[in-house]
Length: 125
Image: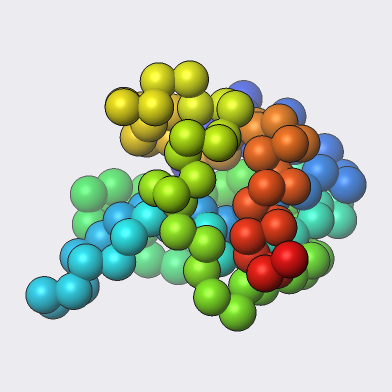
């Protein structure tokens, strides 16, 4: 969304991104927060107001105009569950209130060490 413009515009070609999904309840099932894959940015950030998906209900009719092109590095066969990693992740300083490090953010920069840890868990090495 527009409110995340400054964060998104810091993304550069060659940067790597992890796809993080928040915990959600689907029917009676609770899906834990997880990382599902890694991608590389192949093009600088660009703006396009074309609607490509329906906004979540809590965001109303919001458009997400800032876009990046991605190349798949790896989609994990099994998701990497986030909570077990918290004690080892350097970017999460307050381990008991870890969600605050992610909540309400379009993107979050993490140290290479954390990226490699998540990739290791995702590839089963």
